[in-house]
Length: 186
Length: 260
Picture 1 (cartoon, rainbow over the protein chains, first blue to last red):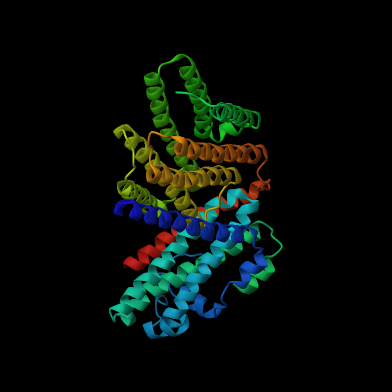
Picture 2: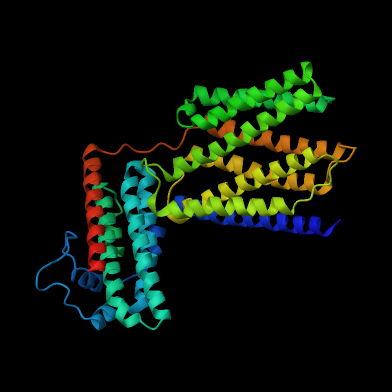
């Protein structure tokens, strides 16, 4: 057995093992999310202060999601936003909750495949929030978190706020029985 | 080439299994959803028949060229089936999911690079240079296929995109078979092909058995119907379309706010 043959066998063994482990891990994750009932999904949501989220979001957008241009808009100070959102940890909670919201939309999709378009938009919104949180983490690494926070955090909170409203609308329009509990959780 | 009774048994079993699979695709009208996969099954039937005829009436050289020409076609069709499965999962609204563009490109690049690296490491102990090409070529294609199927699972789960039941079943079958094939081709490479081809033939029979199990799995799964979905009420559909356009403008406004 020459040196290359040994390396080849080790590499193939590592390659196949890695693929099997990755496939099983993600396959089980997919199975879980398709079998999980909506109550368990809701249990994954971390409770956030809904009034604080609304206050930060409605500082730049109105109830319909339109950008506010009146004199009373965008008046919150960075320190207030920081406090209301709960800092970077608060944003990370919103990021995690966004993933749960996608799963909730996924749940509706199982029964109504036509809801795919909404789920797609929800996913893109979640990615956008993820992007904002990522920028904030970079700012934290370079010591510029305080100045970057209002620039990225407020749009992320506004996106989260709109997402929660969108998911509620989706459930409401689908006349789904769990709407009351969902409202409670969001 | 001398064919044993076992070789003939595998030949006949493969042909029968593909005929049954094709019947399922036609009777259950799955060929309309999976045209490339159906073409792949038809090509397998054609390939099995053609090789049988060449074996009976042709020369050793003509068998060799027919076998490898059809093997290239088979690999191309397998890659096309991968494309069809990706398309059914990531292009369900007529366009590729836009947040997955770069991930898909990277997946293809990494899959090809890793498969090429592993293939480069392989040093088959053979007598003829053609056998090196055969073993390395098959190994590369199996490694690529298995990576692409595992990558598909990862991307779909991470993106939160649901799999349609039949897409999942076809992908599982081809993915598991590709992984088994990687091991068999690695064994071919390691053990080599000497004057005595007994080990090589035994491994090939094992590969054929794995493929027959895979075809049987497809027959059963494609015969079954997908879980029935509820019909979306007409007014709900209208509201969803409205909601989607609102969402688009919401995001645009948020982006504009970020830029200002």
